[in-house]
View 1 (spheres, rainbow, N blue to C red):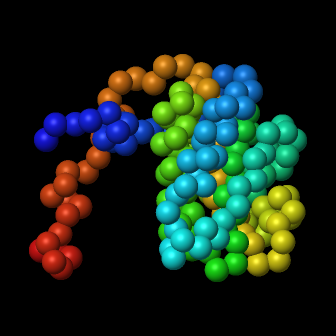
View 2: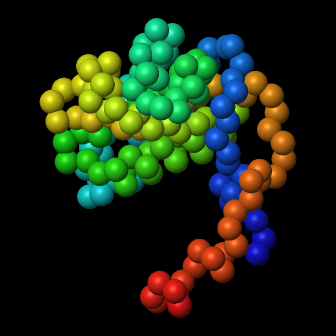
Length: 168
């Protein structure tokens, strides 16, 4: 199969956790959020909102809502993914992936994070009743060039793929 640039970008995408101490360019951030906005959703409900967290103290407070959230502290920007009433985690995952792919396309590193204490995250972000935030994506310009290729590898397709029924 001949691979195009989009496909290569998808299979090479990695979560990066080291960022330069430099704010994101407004045009890059806008492009990333625009790609998030165009993500598909169940019944096109678009039951989400994005809270752009770029103040250092607010990022620290948000990072305290999770267990493995150092990228939130270290990145100049984190986008908190708010699931509004009637929303689905599946759609939130789709938004996160689009954010990461769009970020990569404009030279921005990204790392998804889980906010394990979503009740605390709701308070930190000032969410209205019924809205929740369990996931966020940290963004920043990479501190160093990523090594080419895929680090860590992947399980072989034969271990992941089943035909018609699991185990077959």
